[in-house]
Image (tube, rainbow, N blue to C red):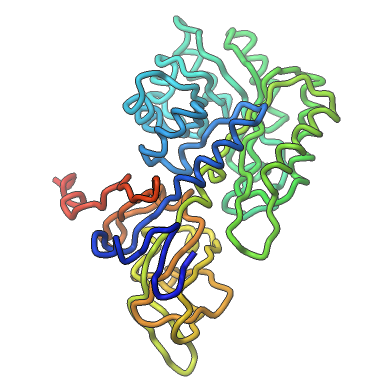
Length: 396
């Protein structure tokens, strides 16, 4: 991706826009996004995009014009969709902590479905729907299946906060039948960045037993399909995942409609952060590069101990330890190899399209940075860098 001294990113010379934008910046590849959408549109499943993975309005409009289905976890995500689109798309409202006001708004807008995560949530919906019952519900079940992923993003074991345990399911079904709240299916979600098919197999075995005793037609198997962060770990190829789910559906003879909620697959590998090395520090114990990007731009390495591949143009001293400029020792990239860099060398951080900008923040009074997209070999701004007024305008 980086070419000699005449650096290019997808056929665009870096020097042509370095003077226009302060580094660091996010850069999306439109062609990669469209290629991923092409794969998704070919599926026979009902695919919903998880907005929590990336809420950029320009990108949401692309989804609105193609997939048209969204998984939300807050009412503000719903409001965003309604503000940027004339027509209401298909919306599933997840979240284990929906407030009363959020439930009222979701019911009034008559979204496609609300995923229920507790008996108390059903009580709230019963009183909301006393006069208006035209809302569909799915019960999110905790199947107690370990997705073998990062402990901070696993969601399907009995120790996690998500979903209703199997022993409490009958209470929920009974309450819905008595109160005439319409249940249209079951919802599951095992975790994020899943890199093995074994948890999927365990989930379908669980589903087979469940719907034998308490049938439902719609089964939401969640998402969490892992993407390639260019680490040594193997990942599940998208086509293999799709074929395997179909194989399990046929093997267990399940007459169901399958819903999946994908997040990072849409944009995860379609974006980089372009930054530079601000300082090189040497001592008898360590060689360090201080970058001008930080955990406020991409918090994943600090929060999850996650790996993001980094590259430079391979000139200078060999450096392995890369830190951000935030005043925290945890502001460090997980790097596995020596990279040759000089002071002010350009650095590319890969796989930054999901759970990066959406989780960015203003810690140390840092401003959120530009988002650009490469579209028809031109750069388009899709998020303007914040101005200092943003940090103080809500203070009273």
